[in-house]
Length: 471
Image (cartoon, rainbow, N blue to C red):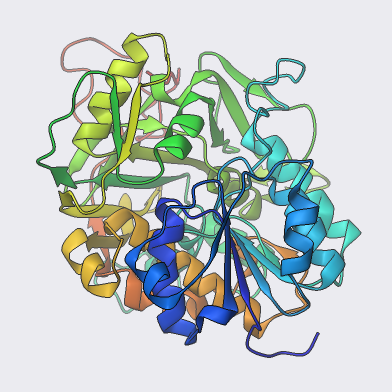
């Protein structure tokens, strides 16, 4: 396929992220209504789609109808954006490969029912398993059209944040000199070796959502600043995290996978019931949900070094998420009700104000802790595009960066965020991320611990528990 601007965009799903993405997409790529098609289970129009005359086909895609629905609407050179929940990434990738279309999603999605399929083991229902299946497609389409897996804010932008943070730590010109300098790594192996030389032991995708609302939450309400269905789905899955080579024993209820790259583990309880201590510049230290995310697995895999098939280096990587206050209350109530489904799910967009603080926290190096990321405000997000809050606009930033890269690299096959040019993607995403900066800290996960109760702390590794337990 020749390098060119896309003929058309086919958007699957017009929920929170779909509505947030569309106005930016039109502006960024100067699209007309004829270049945009939307298929969504919810056909609710916005002022923008009505004004431009963009048609939304109301259809809930499933395994029986997706080929018939999509094939007439997709041609070589088009871009399919999968922004829906419960629409299989793998099947859409295969379809795109068959017609020569580009593909991008924000996470690897299965068909509905996958996460509750009792014929599958917990390991087989995990994000780890979904990623293994997606990576296996690479061999089927070695020279295929580009399909970018899991590229929103996180997963997505955070992988590029990590590379920039590693370079920041390695530059002798900074006052906080780590004593390690390097040229920009050009390969997976070189990035992993840089992380190893910097002694990076743990990476948190550390997010604190400061957005507030004046809307009064009632019992049974589930409030979220992004897809309520998506948040509930990942929160009910077992917690998953990339597992470092330095770790001495599994967490309580921790399990290892018996297949694949084995870069991560899972914990046999929901992410909504699993806590981890982390840190961001505005919040300082806080308790977060250890929620399963694709980047925890892919980043840990990307930064792995092996010798004779034995892992010699890998950092621990996890997503530590503190959602908005109203979302925390929603999760608390849901957990108290044995995770029964809420009666009303609501995404807060126009009703919120405040900042979403999203970044990567690198620990183990000689400066102790370094956080690098975005702290976009809802007020700024709304000046960028309508139908956005801070959370959705950060996802849009990742999508825009990935779309530009895919158009410039149309025959890259199936790729993950870590495979893309980090500085190129960040440059394209920059107009939609708000302020982006790095901050040093002396905080560690065991800072001010053992004040109330004695704990067994490994002094040889000052930020890691000897008998590690996830609360």
